[in-house]
Length: 63
Image (cartoon, rainbow, N blue to C red):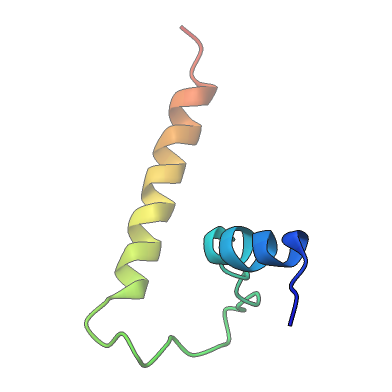
């Protein structure tokens, strides 16, 4: 069976190095993933909110 060069390129290069498909959007009401029980997502979110608030506060301060 003869394979076209474009098909070989797609299969060997593009498909191999393509970024993974994006995950579907998660909503706040959805439970956390159960396959990662050792990760504390709530603490990570709280820390991220703190960092974003601090950055916003710094950006709004006039020198």
